[in-house]
Image 1 (tube, each protein chain N blue to C red):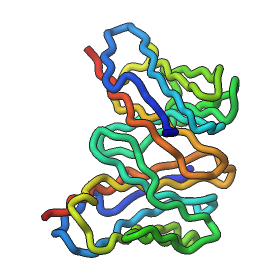
Image 2 (cartoon, rainbow over the protein chains, first blue to last red):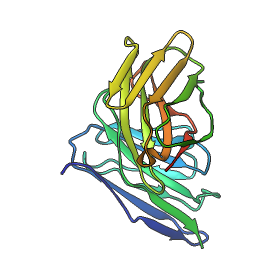
Image 3 (cartoon, rainbow over the protein chains, first blue to last red):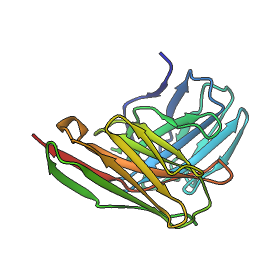
Image 4 (cartoon, each protein chain N blue to C red):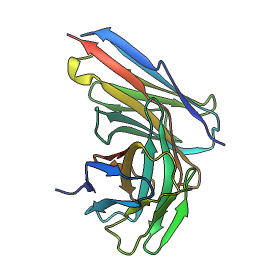
Length: 111
Length: 112
C-alpha cells in the first residue's frame, strides 16, 4: 500500500543535540511538507519542497533544516538552535493541488 | 497573511445528532479548502476537498460547503456516531497552490 512513513514515533533530545526525523513516501508525489503541531493549535509549516534538490522555508523554519536528495525522502533535522522543540511533527506529501497525505507523526520531547 | 479560525473549539453531542462545524478564513483568494480528521496521536486524514469554484462536496454522511466571498466553510455531519469522535481541521490552499494554512481544529466527542 502506498503511504507516508515517519520514524521514529517517539524521540527524545538532550540539550545541545541535533536530532533527525525521517519521512519516506512511496506515493510518487512531487511535493513534501513538514509541519509542527502544538496542543490546541493548528499545524504550522516548517519547510516544504516542490521538487528534488529544492526546498523553501515555511513560517517557522528557524532552528530546523531539511534536505531533499531523493523524491521519496524529506528528512527534518531539529538543531540545538531550536529552543522549544517539544511538539508533534507531521510530514505530508501531495501532487499538484490534490489532497495532502499525512504520516502518523513523530512526538519529540526534551530530556 | 491568511488566518484560519474554527468554531467551536470543542463540541460534545449525543449519538444520532446532526451537527455543524465552522471554518473561517480571512483572505478569499484561495485555490481550494480541505477538511481533515485527526485521531489522537495520529496524522491527518483528508475527508473532503472543495475547489474554489465549487459550492459543496459530499461523502457519505459528510457534507462540506464553501462560501468564498464571505470566507466561510461548514462541515455538516449527519446522524453522528461515537466513531466520529476526533479533531476536525480545515485548511485552505493559497492561489499559488503551494501554501496550506490550517485552522486550530474542533474537538468532537459523540457520546453513546
